[in-house]
Image (cartoon, rainbow over all chains, first blue to last red; front, top):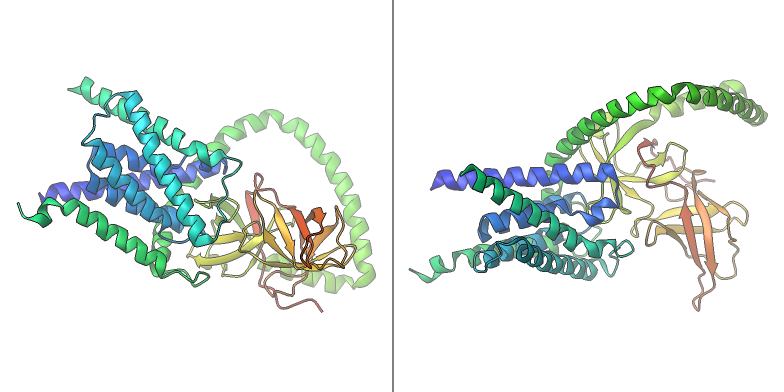
Length: 164
Length: 276
């Protein structure tokens, strides 16, 4: 039991580190790419569907706080929204059939869209209406998160099936 | 099964949400110093970012060097031509400077300034809004501390260092951040105002009354009044001037530094004081 918990913590830590490395390299490719790809959201939704809601919430909290510490925004806003994203993605995916690529994409699109909306709303309330959506580029973020998340999950599922 | 075991997952969620809400609420009102937890996360992750970006940069330069070698002859000829013209410019400028100062004074001040400059590389951008801040690969061990002006490789103002400054990394608040403030003066009309960030990488010149000047295309320089940015640094150019119903004009400014070309920057020594 303890071994499984430690394994989960290790996995969450490695996933957060992976998201952070991905974010660092994306920033190097081009800063505007960061508006399209939210590496932290992709990792949170991917692991939440694969694991459960508690794992998703914990990973969401870690990834969100790391994102917050590399931003001049209020520390904790992304942490809160990503915690909710991880929890509800894990919770709903275990009670609904989201195994096909199309269903999964729609599901992840809705979840990451809600997370983005919550982040914009919270940031607007705390910062006083100064969220830059970069000519609408930010609105495309949920679609990119959903497509990449579904692709990763599908590849993962197929590789597992082939191995077994 | 007891109630709390049945709903354990929701209790965990509520606990996590409460922790975040407390974190957010202790930061209101804002502008307070960075929280300990934020500093810890930054200290832990910034070396990882530096290592990743360096590794990626190494691969990138290896790839680029191969292609650069193929263009190097052409580039060399162009550089020789540029060098000739730059030398001409340098001699002209030196001549003009000599007019104001003796050579010994000039050389001494130049060498002092060069020694105190810290050249840094941009290794990261703001995770929430990239017009707000960048992360440098130089920190307190390299002599960087908070409130030092940062310029790009052409000498244009980029921003200032803010907390957190770790041992080997530092955060720079850009002049395009809405919460930044730089005291500037226009080159022709000598209009003094405070420059802040506006949306989409532009800046806005605040507190310029409707009766004062400020014309299109006019250059803006730092005044040094804020005691953070040394006087005379190029900041930007006036993009538009609009009269409003208030007593202040609405002046939009295009900063000179280009975000896309922001790779190497110089951290300037701390400003001593305002311009007399």
